Length: 261
Length: 129
Image (cartoon, rainbow over all chains, first blue to last red; front, side, top):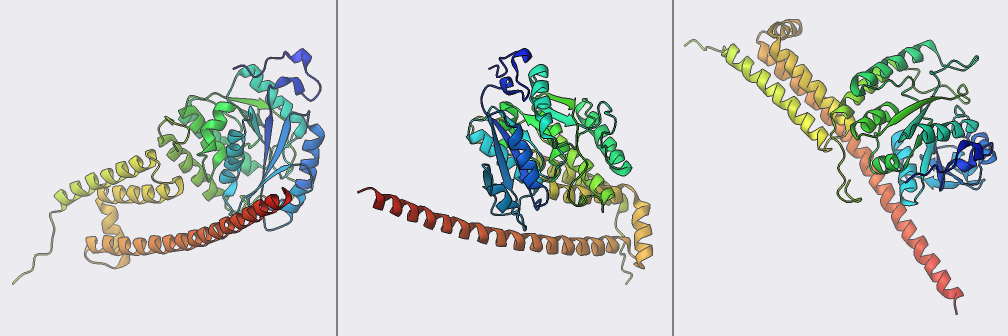
């Protein structure tokens, strides 16, 4: 089914004509009370009408939940903390059960730019990919925030491993700014990598013959607080790489029935 | 009577290498069948790797036992193995404790939701005459 029937000339500035059906903007949130309000406001202002903002609260200890409830969002309030993997997966499960055509992952820390969602949608329409990743590292916008040297080095290493394991070059494999189509939603709705979902999911997509495309998008520097990863960067790296290798061991998913997990 | 405590090292070494490879293959099988989560699989793959290295490279075993002050090399393996198993067990106990708490919370959440549901149903049936 072609869910992108309209040509680009018929789009309004927010890209409303791009998609047939509803889009789930999944916003995973854990203790982001400083940034979530502005992130959600930005998303609502950019909504061309067929988006649903789905906030998944990963049992935050602060006021994140209250802030999410203040606006017209779908709020999934998890009873236990599942981590980023389980949190995003909850959003994808909701998208799967509620017949969304597309899902977008949009982080609640203010790094992602709502105006760039249409970039992901355009790229998906053009490339016919199943997942489109918004990348900081493709073309160089002047002044594009690219994060610290150590992190860039780490990301390069992860990118190299991705190329080794899948044959496809993804320059920003840790980017959470992604669009998922129906096939990708179905793949991940019941099973999504728990610890390092961004790079590991790329490998799983490759294993299941789903197409991944990368497109250049603008991103902001981190708004609130330091990344919790800065401290033990080295061990994190080893864990990511090993996790990716383990993901590469998994065979292709074969669903006989939709309830088979 | 002289007590000969040596083992047939070569045969044992071959067994050890084969055993380590089987162990790694088994863990890989469990991962592919999704019976092991990635995080725990890493733990056992790491141990399998260590066993393999120790069984292939005999000198490492000798070196380790000398450093520990143990005269009989296989005894050093037992000590390391037992200590490692203890640490793994303790870690598992911590994980089990955390999961028990989570299950408790989920059970209570479900019970409260059931209550809320039946309260809502009661209210609705009161509204309809």
